[in-house]
Image (cartoon, rainbow, N blue to C red; front, side, top):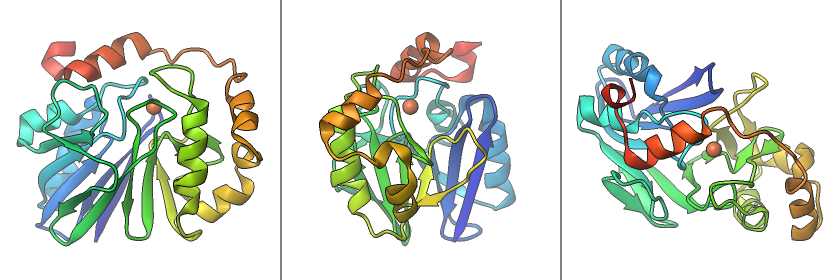
Length: 231
Ligand code: FE2
C-alpha cells in the first residue's frame, strides 16, 4: 500500500495520499489548495491516477485543495452528508463505505468540532479530522460546533475502536505524526473526563482566538473556490 502523509507548515495540516500500489488509483484526504502542485508531483512520481478526494469537514484555517484537484484531475469530491459545501460530487452517510480498488474507507459521522465532521476508518487506522487530535481535540466554539456532540463522537464512537487503531489527525502543532486510540484514551488530557458536562466545561472555557483564515476559508470552502478564484 502507498501511504503518504504530507504537511502544510502554514496551517499545520496533514494531507494523506493513499493507493493500493504504484500505477493504481489514488485518494487524497484533506488537501490544502496552495500545495496542489506538490500533491500532483507525488501522484505523478508514483504513476497514480487521482480518482477521489475527501475533506473531513469544512476547514476554517485553510482553503481546501478539493476543487483545484478536481479541476486538474476530474477526481470525485467527497464529503459527509451533512456538509454544506455547494460543490461536492458525492456525499456519504454515516457507516457508508468509500471504495478505492481493494481499499475501503468507512465514513463515521463524528460531529462536535463542526456539525459536518466525519472520520474515516481504513483497516488499522482512522482519519479523525479535527474530532480527535494527538493529545488534544478540535475546538467546538464555531461552525455549529457542540462540546456535547464532540463528547459523544469521541467517547461513543472513536474511543470504541480497537485500542491499537492508528490515529491520523488533520492537524498537529507539535510535530507528532500519529497516535493510537489506546494512547489517546489513556493520555489525552481532554479525554480524562467522566461526563459530557465536564467535557463541555473544559471546551467552553478554552478562550481561543479565532483562526486567522476563518472569514476567508469558510466561505471559500463552502463555495468550492479554485486557485484562479482566490488570487
Ligand atoms: Fe477544523
